[in-house]
Image 1 (cartoon, rainbow, N blue to C red):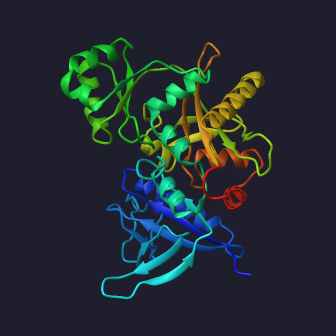
Image 2 (image 1 turned 135 degrees about the vertical axis):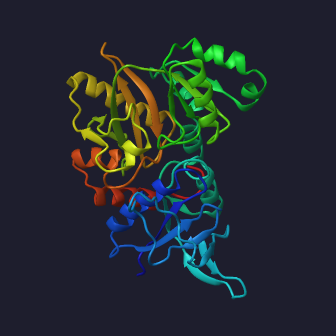
Image 3 (image 1 turned 60 degrees about the vertical axis):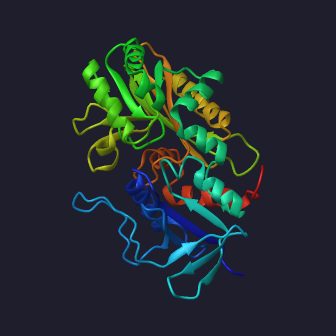
Length: 364
């Protein structure tokens, strides 16, 4: 019998392109190639799909971020059940065969936000991770907060800045934001990996921060600063009918001198540390794990998610965000949380592929 074919898809048309490649490199190293036929597929920054070149670089080297090498054969995924087609100008297209499951190690807009999930749904292809709705809501921090607040999760105060309001009524927007009190954190509503995030302590800094965030997304979130420790928990779907499982909580601490957990702290060496289990009271840890599972189930997530909280000096937990496809290198927070909880990285990759293979295409 032929081995199941797993397409590991990475890259994409957004500012998290390099982050995706770093995660994909780890997945490609860890996946069991004796059990699966693995097809590495890159999505270039201009949207082209290509078979990964043999010398594709996945890691940061000499401070240079990796990008998809477009020298490989161009690919198409027809909406007929997932049979890949390779083609080059002037050549006869070559059918490469059907894909059993796609592992989209992708983040940000046009990837983690339900768009690639919708494409795969239309093609009838199984895939790792959450579906269209959970991915879209999880990506949009404004709607995410609305949904989580309705589910009873404690959230901080925030203001949503939409494109039209910023262009036509900027003074009102700034006044509403200032009611949160300085400092505030400004971030694109639909981006990740701390791209475009700034801390603002005055009106001038606030206005500049909104403009910086708008370079990534015309929709911006302004959040009141929360004094507290950043505690994170990973949630994993069960292979059976049991409820999702929550990892041990871990505390993230910035080591490189940054004011907050920014892109460099997340992806450059020796810039952050993770303490697992987090040094918090046992009852708080259990409450946090329960809230993390509630967030996962509220969005009807599938596969894996990472849920982030603040733990305040007063002993309160405040929900920050959920990531439906969290950073996925072997050294990323979610895989480290599961490794500390007894599920190492290769086993985590295997679990996610098996979950996807067991899922029927279409509505579920």
